[in-house]
Structure formats: structure tokens, C-alpha cells
Image (cartoon, rainbow, N blue to C red; front, side, top):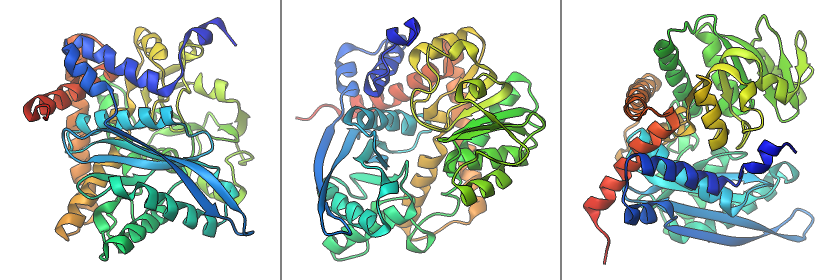
Length: 421
């Protein structure tokens, strides 16, 4: 391990706190308010016994953290992953607080997770795991309290199971208990593409800001799940040249451009982007270092660190994943003139359309896809320019600008509400 990596703390919750404190100093937030806003409001650790298909019982560890509810009910996804930890969920909940405030939707932040490799479970085992987890967190979730959504390795089926489980307890269909549901259970048009489309909207604005043409711009996408694959397709439709893509198995490269939809077809057929005809294999480190206009990290946390930040040759980094760039890397990238669009802005399209879904569920009136996209674009573009103005005002990077904006909004709501009792 290099000396620079040894100096850098990669604990996600420590990173989240460091990002908060950096911005809090910039806006001169008082010490009492710092203490209130840095700490999670509620943290739940649950044991989840599940009867497996072979009749044995396995016990899994689950989490739900509610970071802040000053501006409205908590909001945040649920991930199933073997490396889920409480500190990761704490960090993700905090990032959700600041994300919701950045795009000015009336939510606080939450996050949930189960430490499990879902690929090793059958569909029936996943259902039993999900329903038991929903039962364990039921006392602290609700349409006016905390509204879960999909995240890593969860989907609309997961949300349908949670919605049904809570509905059985209440005796009536609680369609607004979760978002990211199937359309016929109160889901929203545009939700599946929302994270990627929000990313597309802010990349467009970033290109305008730098005087770049998105038509013909070279794009690299790390992570080819829902957000990464759809972002690649949308930017390709804008005329961008997608030159490299990767998933957990490895990366592929073609300087003349790749067809994102065809690569996705190949991945669905084979399980990976690797082996795609007409592309060369490329390592993770080499892919991140490719010369390009737009780099989209759409995988997991801590992909760009102090160890590799100096190698980045992108003009724009749009964080479709949560926490892919560390604070140490932020400083290097900013000094090197890279425009970083932080996760709490770049991937906020998902939670924004989740908010739209919740609004539609509460009113019982549903919008067309075009309306969803129009409202999303308006909110994302407005947030991008508010963040840029804040960054310019304080002569800081876009992440610090977004945090200054978000923390100011949450702090003001907290002051207005007061501390009870």
C-alpha cells in the first residue's frame, strides 16, 4: 500500500463527518448546531432470522439509520451487500440528508441495509429475508416518518414485499410507505431512469459551464448497474462517445466508442461486460486514468482516492454512486482543475423522483412520464446553479458548495423548529 493511502481515512462515516465539518467551517456554523447536525437521530441494529430453502435457519444483520428529520420525514434506500456496515449506513443516511436539502425537497436522510450476498439466496429466501427485515424496522418507518427505497441489489420487487408486509400489519394498502415500487402498486413513471437522468441533466449543465460540447464528448462509466448503464445510454443519445465501461468483473475500452445498449444486452446474456466483441479489456486503474471529458463513477464508495486522484484526466466527474471520491482526492482534483459534481447533487435524481412518487401516492393522482422528466430537469438544473454559485462565493469545490447550501437549509429549519423540550 502506498504512503498516500496510509494517510487517508477511508471509513465512510468519518468521511461524511469530515465533509460536513469542512463546509460547516466555511459557513461559520456555531458549535452547538454542528453537534446537533453531525449526529444521527436514530440507529437501529436488528437480527434477522430466515428459514432457508433447506429448512435450516440463518441469521443476518440488518440496519436502519435516520440521520435527520428537521425538514421532513426521513428518506433513503435499503441495500443488500456482504460488506454493509453500520458506519457505511450512517454515512449514507447523512449523505441523504444533505442530498435532499441540496435539491430542496422536504425530506431528511435515512438509509438501511442487510449484510448479505443476495446472489447466494433464492427468490423465496430473498422474500422471507425482506419481509422479516420489514417487520423488524416497522416501528420506525411510515409515510410521515421514514420512507425506504431501493438501493444496491434491491429493486421494485423488494419494495413491493415491504409495502405488502407493512400493509398486512395495518389492515390497508400503504402504498406511500416506500418508493421505487412497480407501477401497478403506486410507482411513478420515470423512476427507473431517475438517478441516471438527473445525472444527465447536471452533466449537460457542467458542459455548458466549461464551454464543452456534449455531442462528441468522451465518456467513461465505472459501474454498469442501473445508474451506470442508463447514464451511459442517455449520454450516448445526447451524442457523447462512450469509450469505456466496467462492472465488478472488469472493464472494456474502445476509443471509437461503444454502444451502451448493446453492451447491456451482452451483460444480461453473459453476466458481465467482459468479453464484449469489438472492445479491449482494461483495468480499473487504467480506465479511471483515461483522457475524457466526462467520468461517471457509478459503483461503490472510495474509488477515487489520494492514491489515484492525480492520474485522473477527465474534465468533469459526475458521481452517480454515493461517496466514490474521498476528501483527500477532492483537494487534488480541485487543484488540477477537474469539475466534480458531487454525489449529493449528481445522483439526486433518484430521490427527487422518489419524492414525486410519494406526492403522487399521497394525492392518488399520477403523472405522465414527460411531466416527471420536466419537473426533474427543472429541479436538477436549479440545484446545479445554486451549488455552483455557492462554490464560487466561497472559492471552493462543488462538493463544499453543495454542503454549504444543504447545511444552511437544514440548520435554518432546525433553528426555526427549536430544540424540544
